[in-house]
Image 1: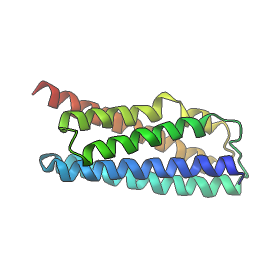
Image 2: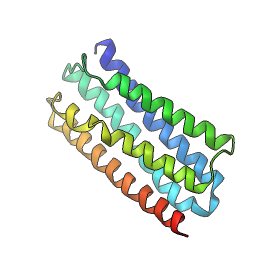
Image 3: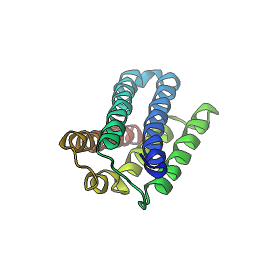
Length: 155
């Protein structure tokens, strides 16, 4: 695997791990939403595992993502995730702000069309299936956190 592809896959895994940590912190900061955040934590952990499978498939298929813009976009996503975690840890976020941050983070993965554009690089049907499931799971998370955020804003 070339260095740029390795960097992209590492960033994808790291970003999913950061989302998982963000939701873990939300769970501890907002115990009244424990069940909601536990569900997201479990899913993010699964996403990390999917990214590890994707990495293996990309190595087997000798897939290169060189020349793509994903590394820059994922680095920005990493920075936003890190800031959200730091804000939460330093008590700069109430529940509404935390849920809004979750909406923005989940939306960030979808707005850049990472999934659809990466599928065209893949040869393995299994790898494509993982990526489609990852994309669908992200869309579900976005819907769930948006609904929860709207519910909190209106109450």
